[in-house]
Image 1 (cartoon, each protein chain N blue to C red):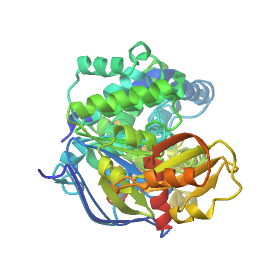
Image 2: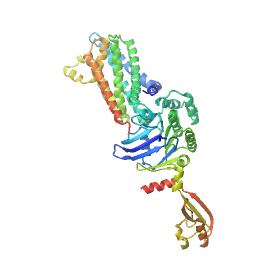
Image 3: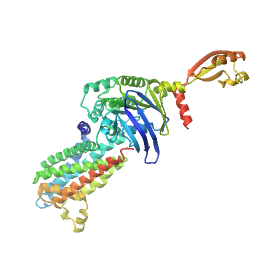
Image 4: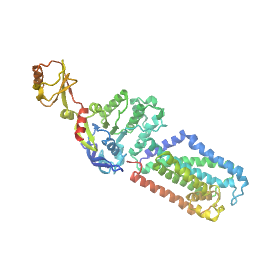
Length: 307
Length: 253
């Protein structure tokens, strides 16, 4: 199947001469949840702005649903909904009016039933007659989501959807993303909260310095790059590791209370030998605990390796 | 053509007028009516007729033009500047609309509002002074063309302005003086010869003169020149807007 979004050799220079995107190519499949990760200033928002016609590409080709975003901008834009990172709202407009306006802007006929469903789903229905300026920050963000959904997009961009929102809204956001995915909507989200990508994404892309440095299925990525960590909690603190254990590449942590061992889960581990040798060296331990490195660790490692 | 989008923006802009009816309709009408009271009734009765037209009636076309110009300009400028200021313009730029549709919606709403104010002033004036309209077709033509031209011009200012001060700069410091000096309150022929020549550099003269001709059949400059200047202004504004949209000037990063 043709990708819903295809970006080829995209370059973006700002007037200042700063190059925000460098020869970037990317394909997004229809119906997937794609998480775009990257440090501040990596180019996440520039990429989304360019895809949504808020910024002009310097060169390169972008197609959405097979339509070129410049030549066939109407068809391409019709497919796309955007929830921006900032929360820009018209302060005096009422919630219901501003959500209806979005539908009109995208050339769709009025559909009060749909608007009501969306507002109810986002717990906004009882606020529908409130002016935007009377809403809290979290509520405003819900309205922006409602505006983007009002024109029934096939592709939804969520630029840092849960930055600075409370737990309840974050859960609601995840629930909405889930139900949109079930309906076949493609979702591209950028986030700093790697847990969020880990929770929701099918695929993960990492962007740094205007380049996509990695695109991978989330599961494959975690399996490929995920290291496991074994922590051996000692009964008595150690001053130094005995020579008998030197060949294991261990770390002594927590003022000698813990021995930490990293291993690759894909390969057979040395854990049985290690534990035997620890006992043989006369070291008593009271607990063991293993954990898998999170997407966050992977991400930090990747970006560090780039720098 | 995305007619629904044009309609959505237009109605939303008109709703904004409705919300701010005191500020956007009542206050310009009151301030213009004050001119009638002061210049028309109080002082005007002591000023002699100008080419057979009483002074109170003579200033009406100029006053209507003046509020039509300033209102078109500030409505359109504010209409597009405000979404830029709040950031809500992101949605307009990402919507499947051409720039032409975008302009029609904003300029149409600004011009409608200004025309509405002009009509109210016209009706109010008819209670105070004896108005006659010799060329109704041309009166409406000048009326609408001026509203549209200045709304286009205001739209450009709203895109150009970086802050509220710049937004006010052109209407207050350029257009208001030009319309005061453009023959709103006097006939150009009353000026010394040198100042008459200088006055012809003021584009507003042509608009007021043409509009006054449609009322009383007398003009400071030929009607064809007035019409030509109005159309020229309209097309120059359109050309600039076309350029703005092609380059994304101040709209797209």
